[in-house]
Amino acid sequence: MEEPRAVNASGVVVEEAAIRQLKSDLRGELLRPGDVGYDQARQVWNGMIDRHPALIARCLGAADVITAVSFARASDLLVAVRGGGHNVAGNAVCDGGIVIDLSRMKGIRVDPTRRLARAQPGLTWGDVDHETQAFGLALTGGTASTTGISGFTLGGGFGWLARKHGLACDNLLSADVVTAAGEFLQASPAENEDLFWGIRGGGGNFGIVTSFQFQLHPLGPVLGGMVLYPLAKAREVLRHYRDYIATAPDELATIVSCSTAAQAPHLPAHIRGTSVIAIIGCYAGPTEEGERVLQPLRQFGPPEADLFRVMPYTALQKMLDAGNPPGLHNYWKAEFIRALGDDGIDTLVAHAERRESPMSKVFLGHLGGAVSRVGEEATAYSHRAAPFLFTANAMWPDPKESDRHIGWTRDFWQAMQPFSAGGVYVNFLSNEGEDRVRAAYTPRVYQRLVALKNKYDPANFFSLNQNIKPTV
Image (cartoon, rainbow, N blue to C red; front, side):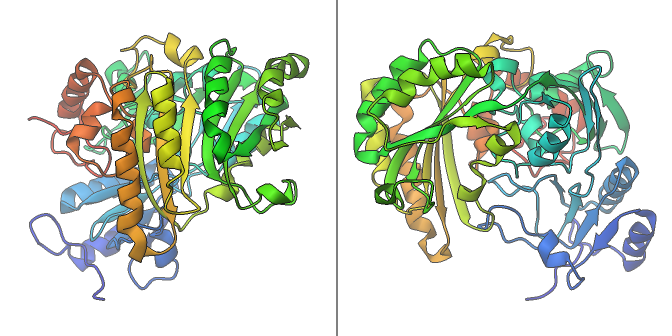
């Protein structure tokens, strides 16, 4: 194929002298098609995404980001911003424009006395956990160690500690942001507080965060793991689970998963490779109390396998990594669910039983707790009252099968609409259009985000995201 050239929105090719100057001005690398490392640098977690940027600026600090933003603005180039590259929509890479790649910005400093962390946007949660756990501290991260911290936090950030300590964005104290104008700002409750409000849930619409400051929390080993049952028992398991979590303490976070059991020696031979329902959990409190709280869950059935044990938090964060490898084709549909009634359970199980790929998964995350106690408009993250987050995750290796797997996902999501709480988690959106972006926010919050976009990015320079379109 023809190598992509740096062509702006008007069809004008960027002059070679300008590109050479950009390369000279960067402390990091500037990669172009044909360069060593280019093909690896343009890959993202979702194997469905295969895009060819003309330029990849591998930034090493805020100065590089400012340089890349200024170049892209002056050249009128399409811009993608890459942190961890894990988002299912694949907005971290573009065709023909420039990728501002933050993946090498991996600095982190932990202040154990004040329980603070200053973290750069190229870090994954595995990186953050490695540093913070050395001091017996932790931050609400995701449910996989390979997820990047940047897009995760900017979209809200739900994980194992969210019911106890809130979302990642609720624990964000300040951020350094490079705007579309190339201006370096600090966003906090005391400075540019409107921007600080918007980046806590509004995604990458308003600028590039080059540094996050987080509040950390004490955390030692956790009681984590899962119980597994045959998928044929899913209806009775889910009804028990629904009653069980009605009184669950904030220390307990759980996710229900319908998937294929791993071919792993720690599982009974008869369940390996079969369709199962798993209740995955983390109790972030005293172990003795956790054993008592988890007893009704672990004894029901009984399960085919009980994998709960005391483990380091870093081990819990890696527990689901193997089931979500990079390079597979992925298509997701998600929705907040208002309740787990019998009709909803029957619908969920019926579609889970019809999964088109053994790698596809269904997730149901239990929210509430500290997430629901933050004011509805205190941050841009919306739908805090929703008790559940449903996701149908289609995963498959063969691109020829895409229509079939995408169809299963869309049909599943449509069938779950009668049980919707009226919104979606922005971080779990594929490329689904403007109406679905609006659904991630309440109407009042969305209007505030539009006003913020008009102020900080009126030309929609940052458009490759779950886009809040400006109106000026």
